[in-house]
Length: 529
Image (cartoon, rainbow, N blue to C red; front, side, top):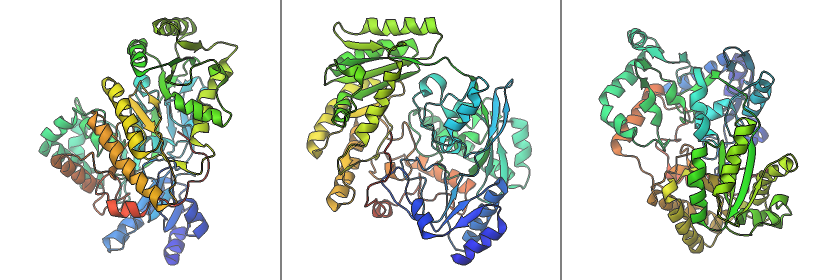
């Protein structure tokens, strides 16, 4: 291993490390898993990435496996940002290379974070309207394609990537963007890596036409390579859609051109506490037609548990202690936003506790996210595990799902307060579990199985808000049809014949091996949504 690290350091501008303390710092993400890499690489240029990938590919051709995992800021919750081979960090590929204000475009490297990018764009009156953690990288957004809080209004990261430069598993670099039928036909006539790839994907689309059509009927599911349904759009073909939610298993993004929007007016919000689920759903049925930017719901037990830590929002001092907290935000012009908020307040049942944001209390509205952080980071010895976050539950099944979730709480003996986005129908629960004990890990596996069955029972999807990675594949409840699995495997083989890019993520997950890599210690640092 030492010789390999020295060889790589001689051939790239960046660094490759094998020091145990560095490897340990990169052996976990936000999931319940832990994998220690052999190397951690910090490339500084796209050519560095090419050299690293080509080296691993050449080793694989000589039957020496050095799988590659790409990592941004390590915020993945499905175990897809860790691996036991070479971990490539995009930490130094974090430049904003160009901003075209008039064209509303930006060219950036994959390691730039959403927060840093939007801070720079705001100086020009522009924004990338993604409601995700500001610490997440652009590369991470593409790899996981989360159904973020603003996705119902703005469409999510998929709708803002115009073009991407991608390093394939062979080490070749290609540009992914929509091409005309004539341009694609010309590419397929060449013997280049790009030509071979386009030729193979065109063949798969023709051979598996019925499967692709069937897959189109499940829009709330990012399992496998679901965006194969978007490769052919009208008279254009693009491989770019396949990168979204691929979790680094098809290629490594080294450069991105993003389409931007004008910065929206500041959001203005209202909150209400509704005593029962039926009243909540009646209000939401009306509110969703008002085109809110954000609609979040929280089980009030989250607020009460936060209050134990001394962090109950001041705005809720006079509110009931049970039921649902509803938070709605609009980002229209001032007058339109005011009308929308008044309409929201008018549809609430008489006597409902509700507060609208104004100049005197705007700072207090930040406390709701702080209350959620207090809940997730309570002084309990157990950890609030991010095991199956961001599952899709159809709105018409929400009440039945909540009822059965209460039964599951009694069965497992743990509290499972729900929180999430009604606008995107994606929700999370965070069970409090001690991963350091065998009994705790057994409880975790029981939760994974039973909660997964509950989601599927109510017509939901484990991969509605984020892809499967390793963790969401563990329960084995959401099984893809055989013809679909075959299509995805052939897509993977077309892009990565030697299976060196994040193997065991998304496809062919080794359940026994994954269970062996369950963390036995609590995750350090701040636990975030």
